[in-house]
Image (cartoon, rainbow, N blue to C red):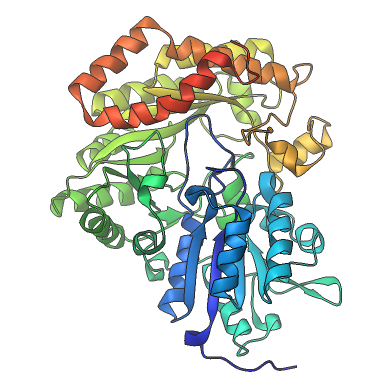
Length: 494
């Protein structure tokens, strides 16, 4: 039955990062309240908001955890805005809360609600049928799917016509055809103007970037086969698609002009230098445009010195690198595609190029033992990146590693809310053979202390801040919460 038709310009759409714990970083790969105070920009929601606004829709983006908005405040504000359609991001650790928020919204206002994000993409039917408050959900990239949903809410398109969704019909889940990944990423609106309109950049923090910073993507997808990484397996696939260098540099120039308080840019690509030629071309264009602005990016240890040098010349200040483990057999088990012997060379090349390194180290991988855990710590101490994080492997629905741990009985939680502690921090959800989750967490606490409390490391950081005062604000902000956990441990034990 046809609904009353509306012009898109008359349609109101709420794009919502729902309330939960204050500073709950829902948009990151491992959503939680973080020990470092990290809070990611809602970049996926911002892209969708930009597409809606470009089409003339009255769209608003609300980030409740960043602004400290309570559920009641969101409900009151939503009642005033009266959206015809609500788009809600949902992730595994918060999905039970998020479904409850959807119920509360539906009880307060007459609207349609669709879920987006990693968890709905990984478990669509389960998510949809878990609550009558959901009218449907989007699978994978949803920028243009959300625009089609706006047309449906306006009465000019049927749900059957919209690719990439699962919707409710007579109490059953109905699937439409899959939506192809976006190939022309240059066609997407910039996210920076969306941040400018709806967000405060000082609310967001990543210790890998100078504060305050702005996060953007230069591409989507990852060509590598890591079995644990959630975004390539649920959202954007394993084919690396990227924006043209000209398009990315234009957004950098927008950030520099319109966010005078910003000190850096963080590129949230899975691995920005995955295409060497394109990465070097991008850095050369930055130089030709005479842009002098620091940036940070994710990368892997297989990046060579030539690329690192080009990145440094283009303004790259730090790279975030997944070393993961010091045991080759464990890297092979997660299909990392890197070699332990690459790691020391990469660290030397980055240091030679003048790029700082944030190292990520995981324990609890398939086949992990106490001996392999020690190898990982030895590796971290030996290559000594500028900063490091140690954490038990986090597995999420939709990934190959989650299925493996579930099948082998190594998953130690029964509900999705158990992915978080009572404080909203990451909870260890796995065991490794006879190594319990609690032992993995305690080991990470001790590894963190051994890494950060070395006299040589402390002197190096002091010298760094004296020589580069721009590092002071980043270090101080990260230290406020980080050192509390460093000394007391995850279980409150000094």
